[in-house]
Length: 168
Image (tube, rainbow, N blue to C red; front, side, top):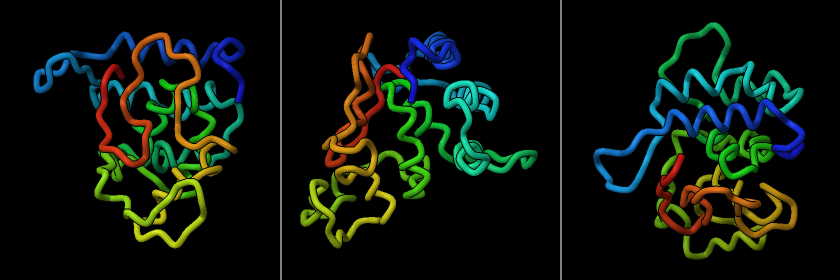
């Protein structure tokens, strides 16, 4: 995947997302991207601008079937989170494991004590959580980590902890 310096579509989409973030009234100091903004920003056109030439299947995984109105976010949140932490190319691993927005947030109890993301094992958790096993997201990395954040990344990166969304 090209870096943000070489993909102007990525940078402009990220800037627009950051512009539309609102403060949470439920959790002081936290922010969120409204659902309407998520639908208006994470579109097939913007996905193509960011990823270059994604397959139709990948775009459909993220946004749902074209011309079929739906309230489901499919994998829009996942894509937005990955974009925010500069790992949007990893969306293909999420597609491969069928990890969708419906699986968020991940709670620590979801992952079995016998699960070790370092090794391939017969884990007791949902197969979709295998996306966090070593080599599934980014070859050779143990966990999702932002490359060089300019602001505080969302606390969603450790597979064995409860996800919490901060600046998004």
